[in-house]
Image (tube, rainbow, N blue to C red; front, side, top):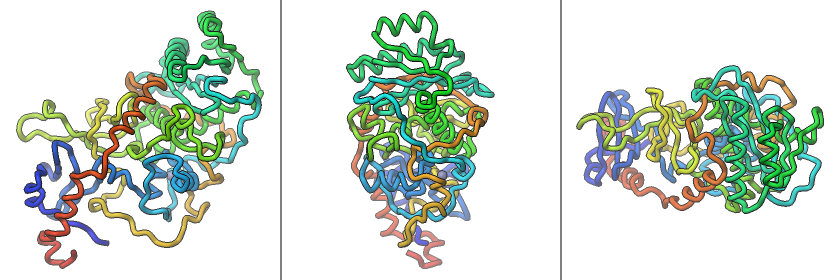
Amino acid sequence: MGFNLMSVGMMEERGAEVSFKRGMSIIKIDEKISACGTRKNGLYHLHMAPMSDVAAVASLKLWHERLGHVNVAGVKRMIKNKDVDGLECTSMVVKDICEPCVYGKAAMTPIPSAGGVYVTRRLQLVHSELWGPMSEPSRGGALYFGMFTDDFSRWTDVVFLHKKSDLFAEYKKWLTKAQLHTGIKIKVLWSDNGGEYVSSAFKALQDGNGTTHQTTVPDTPQQNGVTERLNRVLVKMARTMMRHKDVDQDLWADAIKTSVYIKNRVTSRALLVGKTPHGLWTGNKPNVSHMRVFGSTCWVVLHKSHIDGKFGDKAAKGIFVGYPDGSKAYKVILDDGKFVKARSVVFSENTSSKVADVLENSTVEDVVEGETGLDAGSDDFDVDAKDDGGDNQQNDGSDTSADDNQGSTRAQDTLRRSGRSRRPPVEYWRPVNLVAHRAPMTYGQAVQGQE
Ligand SMILES: [Zn+2]
């Protein structure tokens, strides 16, 4: 029930810059937005947490959403076993049914791990498959997406294509990066025998690289299993995330790319207990502290050079649509339709506006799996649905800009950087809270006599 009041005067005294415009307030410290608020009944309600390690601490439900609606039991296990870094949780209680989950993945059932070849190292076996055409092009004009999945680590890269024949060029780029990253040559590539995989150029590339290319025989589940299952998982995750925040359909490529990003960073039933694709592919535990709910409303802090005159807006509103390769930043589509990559972003991950950063009240009861709707039918992320045949039709949408096609090396770079730039608990947030406790003095507060 409690809430905090902030004194503008005290914040100003401590070096914060507070501006008010069109019913909105923006609090900046050291040129970084630390909070935004909107006016309600004469008070400015701060309804989002800052991009910071403070914001990284979230409820189990919020982590469930940030991680693409992965199974709650799986999130809890990752927290308990410390399988990934940065997964800090305030409350292990989930009470409400997660509606997007109910709609998005009602038919999930656990799947057995892939049989067949015994794989002991990276790039010993790679699965690739092309999906599409989607029923509408992505915003960037893509109609297809191709995936490259390393069997050993289950690390996946996704590329978006305007036409099938673009796959060759993308595979070539991916191959170079993957081999550079691992220092290993790919031994066996499995794909179907679609035309894009059996061209003479493709064959020449494989021969030159010493790769055995095996095309799958139709209806051999153990061969097709990995990519088909992965595709269904990713599409379901993308669909659930899009539904959750009512994201435009033509942003499907961003949703798929984000699903891949998430999937690479969570444990999987296909792997040994506690292992993530990221961990096996890069050798480092993933850190997820920067991750936010796909499709959330957010505000990008504008660089000085973009601010229009003295009283121009200092932040631009948009929708968070993913994690660009190669930089610790957020990809945002602004209200004017422009895609930007930004580091300083303030998120409103909860649909309902809340006063500032109030922690959820925890109660003693634990999650009752199955009753929440979050665990529908399985206890891990890497679960699959019976073939419902409708996946490809549902997810149409957009594409992402050029960064969609970056491969694993840059993705790894992202991670390395995010590790390096991890900061201690943010300084600019704490003094503000302190001020709030020390100076409870606006009229509403004074009248009500709370805090
Ligand atoms: Zn959910």
